[in-house]
Length: 269
Length: 349
Image (cartoon, rainbow over all chains, first blue to last red):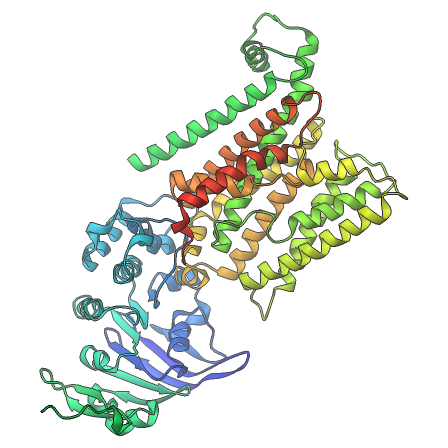
């Protein structure tokens, strides 16, 4: 299990500040959802934690060692990232794509070993796509592709899995399937998970800890019922909602209220 | 295990066809020399063989001093361009990219044109001023394009393509201006300019081969070093970074290697088109996109392709020599159109 310490982290792109003084501590084995409107800094935070962006100020520590001192390769041996989607312009098979996850462990000119092949096979198996292994990646549906990318990330044998809105392009069945799988990996293997999420209701259902960002700052950090209150969602998302308990689990369930009365249908006769 | 056996077999077959093409291309020319004789001559060079000579002494001179250097030159040009094509296509994630895409062709062409105009006649190891100027200007152009595209420590691919396009257009315009306005006054031979622009293997002895061979072989081995990273780059720069690739550093090194290989080829052949585009493409379609196989297989196939194309260029209209780039275009373009029509799906975004 790997822990994460984000201390006083700020980040600015050339044209402006994106994150202000973020302080977060994430313990090994936690499953954390990052919420916030578009442009609130979720993706930037994911990229900072993955090490592909460097903080303008502050420090990020992975298990105590400063991320900026680690090489890309050594970060990739413990941190894997699943983005919204990948486009691959060449005709790789599913097996070849998942094998890309072993690259951080392979030396130039080396061949993959039996060990690498086993990690790939078990990643395919975990995600439930062993049957697709000889298929071409570019011929798969969006949901299948996202599972392949998840399998590739798992082949990296990560201790920390970062997901950047991993299900935003998927249908509801695939969304639930991927979240259930991530939740299972978190529970069974102690995988630390941080996921930027758009869907507040799915985040409420699957994450024990939610962090709400707005304009580059942490607004609130806590359990779904602490974070997802009516007033806070109205304020941060400027959306008119009410919050009810989920019929089965009791976690907050957000119901969007249309603003215009005219949208309301006439009562049934 | 079975997988790597398959790879060895494929590379062995491709290597075999390259060697066969070398022999075949050595056999034809103004003087016909039989294949068995060439084989025996070649074996006699290995100390343990001593076949009685059934050929004239002059034949041996023709083979070893004239044809073999030229044929080897063709193989090196083809291997260099095909490898550079794989590197550029992999880095730019675009199967339509060719080695000239970021300005090497324009730089080399302008450099060669200026060198042809200068009333200087230098030669070093068989290299005149033209190949040296082409080599230097090709590399200088890439450095210029790379730096023009650089923003805040990063070199976005799209700005590099745009910078490459603009710089190429500018250099070709300067070249056209020089050709049209100066050819009367200076001793500019338009025929040699065109033969440079369309590609012509101008190897006259072993000196050039001795210089180019280490560049090309070293470049191919260097390229193979990046095979995993090129595979990772298929996911895009961000995806590659997630897999532990130092993207900006690798981008610079891969561009550098590709440009060095292209410049080496250009210095002995001018601008031979389509090799760097079609060969990697065809190899990728038949053997798959894994760069560990794609790189060496493309180098061997590219070598064989240019050797055969140059053989046709020398012999089809003998004694007139067709620029080898005309042959690679006439055979490469229809093949490419065929690929486009049949694999359009591959370029869908």
